[in-house]
Length: 113
Image (cartoon, rainbow, N blue to C red; front, side, top):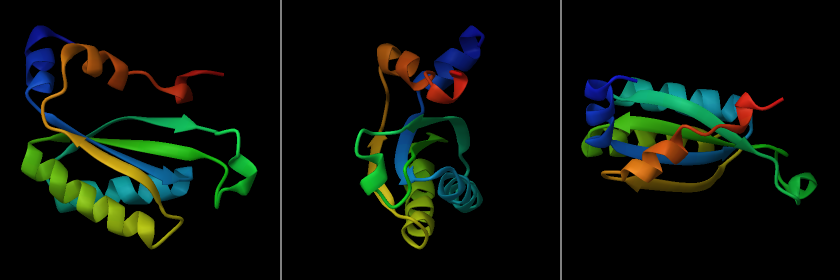
């Protein structure tokens, strides 16, 4: 990422939408991107210790980036789609993530074998 992209990224909000399952994540991401002018960051996954007790044994976090208003609209659309499928675990919007938070947003368990 060059310095212009880094600066732009630091000025953008991030929406974190954690859902049950990869298919639900793809459909929620699609709904959010169609509802607002946002882009996606790399998804992340988590298989919690109580995975067998969950509706789907994999939690996936969708990351929307854009203006606060666009991220809010994308999150709303993504959340509604996820609720109609397997469900939402949690949702959060960070208006202006710090540099350290930006670094954490790049981490993804999908990159691990």
